[in-house]
Image 1 (tube, rainbow, N blue to C red):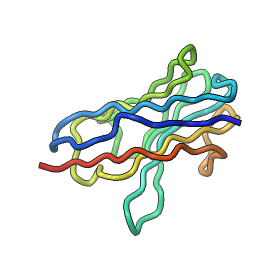
Image 2: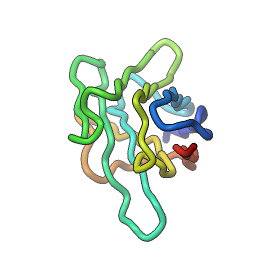
Image 3: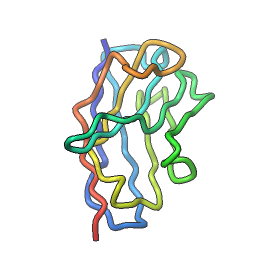
Length: 121
């Protein structure tokens, strides 16, 4: 099984940037598709971005296209989410997720504990 630990969240002003990191351990990272989801109180968890296990294909939710970039470093067992031009509506707990497949499914098997992102002036 793989364990996931997110970092990099925090408070940022509107228009600012953050880079989230997710460090994986306990599994063969390169065999997992990974991605990011987010959740705000009272709402369902929503998909943000995903990357295939070899890193060749990425996918984003429409609201994050052009403002974010997901990447992975299989040598470091880490996946990143660079977010730019952040808006207050991007505020949420961001979760890293992984699944032992080429593509990340809607309900991955493994989840991190989450990192809070707050966009506010």
